[in-house]
Length: 279
Image (tube, rainbow, N blue to C red; front, side):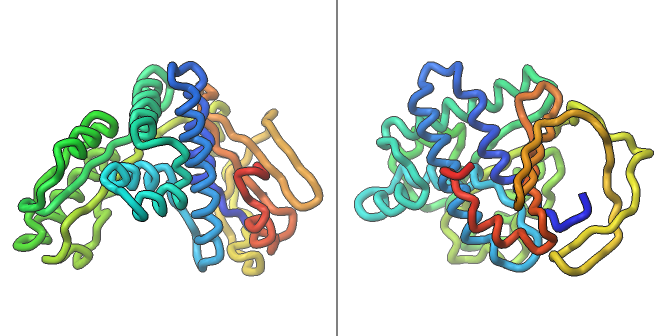
């Protein structure tokens, strides 16, 4: 592949989460949740796609974290959050649906050839009070405790505590999620969601086949980059403007889907056509 490429990993992740749903008892609510999460993912990507530089995000992390606060929202705030996040279920059904989905992800990964875990936490100023019903939903449906920290007097210490939690949950991959200076004495709550994934390709790339080749970094600028190569049979689709390739991981439950425009500068046009309905 010798053209401009931005791998839509975040969108792929949302699609992959739909696979475990079929065998669940609450399949209808889980499917509704996944559909809404996918719609939110495309909406969010459309907002961010036009910015300069590479883009890597996990819409499911955002949906999951904000859904915890949604449990405490009422009135116009509740309506506005539901609209933006595409929450199509009532409060009493939405949070159990997130619980079912998260449990299926964590449980399923333990029985497979990949590692995939989702973890949530709420960090609150120590003198802030929360309703017991809100705390119950956070614990039961998101496996999230509300941890009390002293942002007012020790914001840097609170930052260190949160960063160490994230580092642990991501197997030491993310070591400084919150940079110095982000938290201060006015901070009252921090939401964190950590997703860790590690898997092997179903068909491994051979190291000796990695070669330096031309890569179009922005559709125009040519640079030399190390590109992996292999020949095999994969799910593939192509038309006059687009190529789509599915690279499965071992077990074939999860995949990376690569969308590649035909033209070197064809990414912006492709991004405008990406919607949940189109895909």
